[in-house]
Length: 460
Image (cartoon, rainbow, N blue to C red; front, side, top):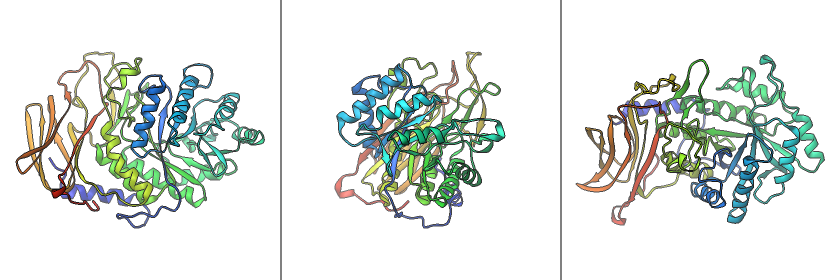
């Protein structure tokens, strides 16, 4: 069923209520260069550990308007992390397209941090900003309330500066009690406590509902800008978290394109300096936005369950990436459909009794297909889910639908004036499962309208 007028209004109001006062419309003021990055998990070689594979990924990212990868490095010693970083840099340099690379550190060895910086600071694709090499980290700051002692960043950054390597430091630091959904006051406290070393803050996000993630970005944008520093917001397509020892895996309903739309509208209204898509290729926690068809094909160590393409998430984001970077909403000359759904019911029970269940679900988790349909003229969308078939008559513009799903084949057919515009299929939905699989399937279909039917879509 299509999301009702009231439902769309409530979703829109929810996104607006999260934002500080300001104009919301077709044009947003861009006062400084807005960069969009993608958070790249170096531990996964999306298309294999090859130069051609990394060149392909950079090409895909740049085609979406992404300016660079933030390389998430868990270890820095001889081995596949260093080998892959070397190939990523070689690929970026071979392409010669100015693709920016920076590091997000998840290890604590001071000597290794220094070695990484010395090795890559002067390479042509390394991202420098305001006279410093851009560097981020996953926490590793002091959290006295929990007894956590972080790295001595004052000494690390001071030492690098004295060696001729000034750093523009923009980490994801943990607030008091390491809240996953930090507040405005949390950001202010971090900025005050670490004022001498911070050039800005990054909010990794991911764990939360779309409205919560948007609120956190709003909190941080306000606090960081008040401090006169740079903020890098996170946008997350979906999250199915790592196994928790006490309560299984956590699943947060992202509502397909609806959740992305809400996060991006918050970004457009609040105007953070940079955005990081969290993530490009974390195939373990479902946050990936890479368009790879089969994540398991090249990363052979990935175990069950199946990982599906998330190309719909990336394709849907292209519109907002361009809008955010230019300050003006792009116009469209195509009909396009995006779909998002899980491949089994939330109540399905895995035959493998040793599999880790999903015991914590956040949000309004339903057994539905989420579709977003952008139309330049009215049309009819038929959704066939198993033995069920639903036809929706849709107006010009953006339409969000939630359609109950059934086991079997999943097919989407768009018709106009009795003629098929396009048709596409997604993965089957299963009635019986061996293991739990809350990785959403995602895809899209599109076809330009003939020139005599072309119509420019305005603000939606």
